[in-house]
Image (cartoon, rainbow, N blue to C red; front, side, top):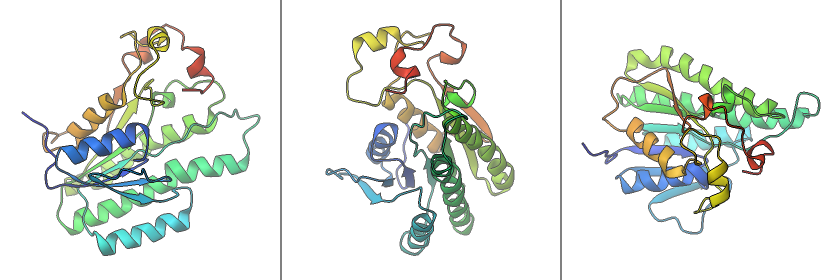
Length: 250
């Protein structure tokens, strides 16, 4: 069985770098119409319709939603993937930083999920809403209060959405990546060797993208309200994380 997204309209946030960009490109290759949201639009837009949008601005998000409903009007898959690192403890985080993280990774996903659900119900589409969390929701790194908090919120949000939307045939899933290298095409060999996963290497964006493609496809018919971990066994590994990860450099 081959994964196909032909004929589907997919909206992906955080689609201009890392896992989001890799996912957007793969979805386009699999036949989807892909609308990618990000703060910086790539110069090469082949196969993906990129929209520049600051998801920390509630006014901008609401404006985008009205425009999307008016100009596109259909959605089969929403992937709330946008994320930024935030390395503060409870002792030094500012209210500005806390507000920024909540707007980006809680408020915006809720608003976009509401839009997606409304359009899916209106068009009788049994669609997919997928929220990309992180294993830090379960196992926080030091000085990652806001990041771990919002990633945990995405899990609870997905479960609540699944309860509300299941009667419409809409599936809601949370994906929790572990240590995935997104700083370049090639993972430094030394970092790969020291990765604290059971597989003794860092994850690659394309590995997460392939999982998201399956979950977004018609092959996925009975998963909802669930968390799917893709971390190479990091959560049950007793190996220590490399300094580059604990310090937030990668």
